[in-house]
Length: 508
Image (cartoon, rainbow, N blue to C red; front, side, top):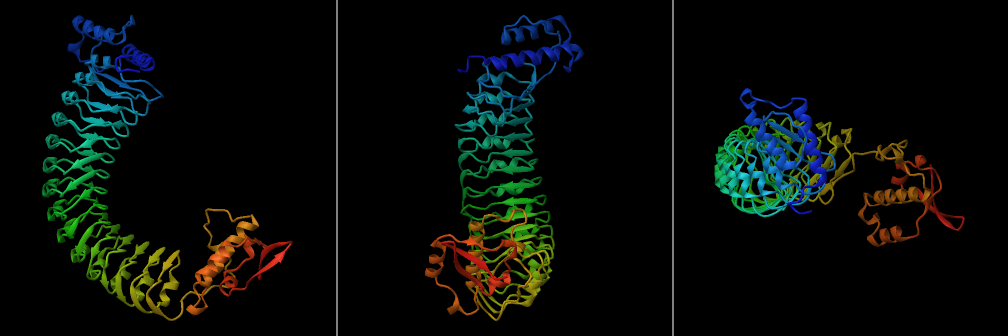
């Protein structure tokens, strides 16, 4: 359907909406708008749009229009004749087509929401004429082209969401003129170029989402002027250079994500001034140097991810001050030195991953104080000594990987003879009733235990494992609930033949 053709569904709904609004007097009508000349003006506009003989009321006040129920077709160009329209919401329909340039005639429009409507084409430059606009949402569509610089004319704009489109080109510097903006979302596009320094003029900005684009260059130091900023997401771009120390000026910041870029240099110590920060994500960059001691000042931090960088030096003991920390990810970052004993003070920790580093020394016994820990990965380091018995006292621990270290001694874990394999299965899933599937499960568990044999020479080779896994599938003779982990650990599972089929028989 072309842009110059009125979709029948939109035609009917707009007619109905305007007629009902007039009949029930829901318009906000100023007293000065009740003259006969005003009545004729509005009727003429309605007739121009709808070419209808409907008896509309004489009011000419502010007109709201909202509809989300399976509309199809394009937005008619005649919509531009609704010069009194203040609220237009057509979100979650299948409108398709392009945005008509006549939208720019709606100079009294305050709220425009076309989210998730399959609209394509460019954003018309005439959008800059909407001087009263406070809310603009064009997200989750198929818009292409660049963001028009005229967007900077929308001085009353409070929220702008252009996320998840196919927009290209740079972010226009005129965006810095939107002095009332509190929410800016441009994520999920193909925007390129650098972040304009003029973004630092948005002193009222609370939410800034530029993630998942192709932005490059440095993070402008002017970002430190955004004193109201609470959420900052610059992840999944091509940003390079270092993190500006001015980032420490963002005293209201609660969430900061700069992961998956090419950031280099050291982590600025000024980051320790972000006292309200709850989420810090710097993963998958090229950050170097040590983790600053000032990180311990982030008393409200709940999740910290600095993994996959080229950091060096030890994990600072000041990390023990992060009393609210629940998730700590430092894997694959070339950290060295010992694991600080102060980690035992982090009573809210749920997940810890320090794997793939150069950490040395013993595993601190203080980790046994982390009663809520469910995930602990310390593999692929240079840890030495024995595995502390205190690890066995962690009641919720589900994942433990200490492999590829230089640890010695016996495992602190002792399997109860009464613990069945069904006791360690995911409680959200029903145990398999198919004996073939149950047999597969027992085979995997048996082989896993065999690979943990305290004598390395007694562990099965990869060839043996592959032969077992590639062999004919075997049914389990006994119910799965009767198979104990103790038996599997002691390798008391025998493979026997039954009815011309290999069957696993559990000694229980």
